Image 1: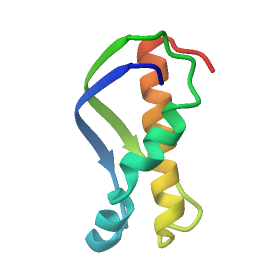
Image 2: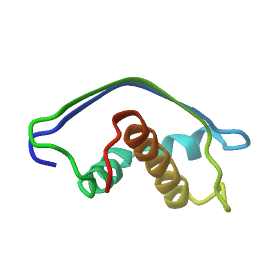
Image 3: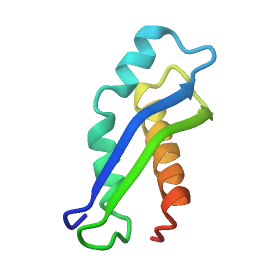
Length: 90
């Protein structure tokens, strides 16, 4: 990611029908998932990306009881929101 700094103040996700413990488990390790996906983007070296708040709406998954699938869906939704706001292309 070449010295790129991304600052997100807050992420809002609607988790309808997802038990609190499952939601908590899905966001543990989310940082590593995001770093892996962000590393695949085409960032300018030294770029600073201030995001503020991300309102992601409802994240859809086939199996809402699968922590890994939920984590990946959240990460992908966050990446799409960042790319949309910054105009970065893969």
